[in-house]
Length: 302
Image 1 (cartoon, one colour):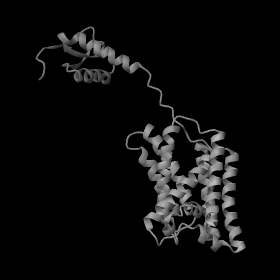
Image 2 (cartoon, helix red, strand yellow; image 1 turned 135 degrees about the horizontal axis):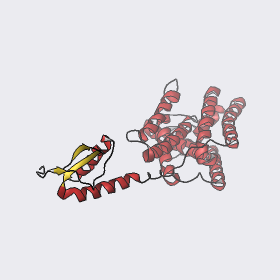
Image 3 (cartoon, one colour; image 1 turned 30 degrees about the vertical axis):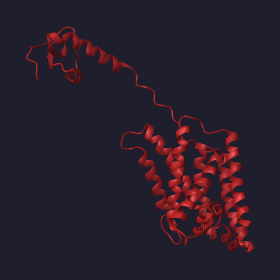
Image 4 (cartoon, helix red, strand yellow; image 1 turned 90 degrees about the vertical axis):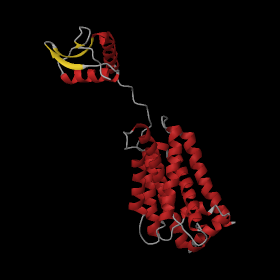
């Protein structure tokens, strides 16, 4: 219902040389149920309101202008991605070279087929309880090109993730997400499926990066440009690097990405506003990863 009282310009009400500002005042007052009209006087633009509402309108506009004058709140602190140190990059490359050297050593010694038989991610045996195969399969490759490719991409993504989590935790992420991806792959395909290769863990690293970025974007990004952008980027990397070709296990790559994304989000929650874990945590994570691989191969050999 509109007010029938005449609208008047009261001296208590502010004046401005900008019509747009006066229109903003009118919107503020209309939101509070005050009848209002923008008018232009000798000294500029102002608003006319019923005389009975003049004091309330002046108070409302003063409060509104006071709120607008406050500085914007500081953005919530959040962890950012930093480049890995030179040492971390060198160690990531060393891990990739070790992967290639392991393949060459098995191939030159004539024991590659034996180790593949003992350590491949053979679904029927994994489901039956040979869970160590989800780990050992990450260190096996059918040929040198496969080993070199996974070594190169693995070193690249391991270096990037080291900048956020540190190399020790990045290695642990590779092992954990790769093993989880291989286990999911075995369950998905069932008894007739076999697979080898570090690529499940490599795409697990991509997933961790995507999960960390997704959580960060969820917290600070503009609407409709949040978490899905980071997760979509992870899917695009899988499609580009591991989505087609002979003997490509796309499901394993996707399972690695999925496991990594969940791990990345889980890690981002406690680490969102914290620096990356320190040297002790890195050393323990790296030692645990190496020990995990050694124990898996010891189990395979027994």
